[in-house]
Image (cartoon, rainbow over all chains, first blue to last red; front, top):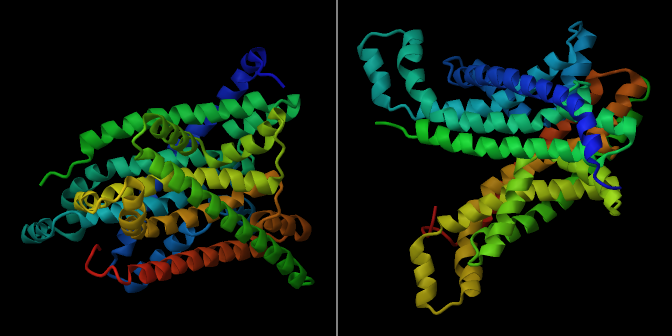
Length: 219
Length: 219
């Protein structure tokens, strides 16, 4: 079978529909992962041993199991206990939770990298726990970890095709439905691959810039 | 609670397929990692360019897209693969690209004095690599290889989408036959996690064994 440019133009609008959903899922998933990661990182440092341990184990479990099965879990099991989620929401929660356990490690390293003197200075200035975190520790910890966080968001972007398995109409799913309708796989699948490749190559440039801008730790 | 044992047997069959895929994929990934990783530090521009293209291509597009491409597009090019072959090929090439960067990083992390010592002992490039550089670099690679193997294990769940009867696929079969959702998905998650623990335990043991006799040489 030959490559057919007419067919490419014909299916382009459908694929672009999918691209929009893919990007939406990535953005929402990234925001959720950033929040969940911070939550996990803070909970693991909690004074309460039980909280710290159980959150640690939970994160370890999520990191050791496939995203696809977690998506199925959210999509199929939660409705049985009365929580009915639209596919996209279930997908975003899955992505956010899964990558949140990865970003938690980035936060942990970033927080550990804040010199001890800063903690002591906060204590000397009589700042409470919450103020120490929001005014002293996090503002210093977060900028150096931006490149590492961005790296995980790009990885998440490449995992979004999995959402097609729980019927989210993102790029991969649109391509599959196009392929199944016309029984032509070459163009849709190759276009999806090319799209991801182009975005990833662009993101390498973005990452370089982020590393240049934020990657250094100023002491 | 009728035939849980039968369904459990189905899931265990799936576990065997997952293990088989993980092992075969890991072997292919290991081969590709050394080929491409050493290719990236080659003297010859062509080999470096080839290795870089391979790595960027497979890291830039997601495993899911590569798998679908291998399964649906290659037949049009006259290369029909069974689901298992397509799965091993996509998993091995994808994870191999990630691991290749590990190989390169580890080789470059060996100190310059070691290379100079090779020259001083009149070892050829290949001899030096084989007897001096790689034995030290291998120890640096090992922990990250463990992580890569776990990533590969998690990625095997994707092959269920090209109708290969692995763990995830069997969980879906059990779900559709019994209507129960919690039992299949939770048990499958636990099995994946147990397999991941086995991998990380195996790598730690291997690391301890290989570090023996290298005391004081490197960390």
